[in-house]
Image (cartoon, rainbow, N blue to C red):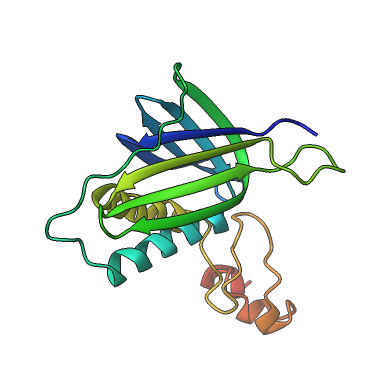
Length: 185
């Protein structure tokens, strides 16, 4: 069993998300940076979507305090900045209503078949403004993927035949991926 490597970046001054690759084959990540170091947390599209939805729910449900308390950054004892990059298996999000600061925790996927323990963890915190920006950017990136089928909402891949369950995949006259010119042939 590997020793757990836990890192806390504290309050980050940079937070962004991105997608790499062509629609249908994209990988997604969160990037965070502070004076303690930086991280790239790779994830599935659904995980990025859940982060955005959860943050949006927090932002809507909890108002910003008039006079927020200072955020208490935990002491890690680390003297050198860290650089952590991994594919996440688990993530959690919390909000401190007194300081109005959000904290994201992520741990990696175990690389050994017989070991379910993570090897690395990262925690970082960010302001309400950064949370709002992250929600907007995440939803924009997610929406930039493949166009959904108007009938079954499954993602359509350009140049590939779509087997639509709503038309049993048999009736090209009702196939939403075939244009009017192609139907008349």
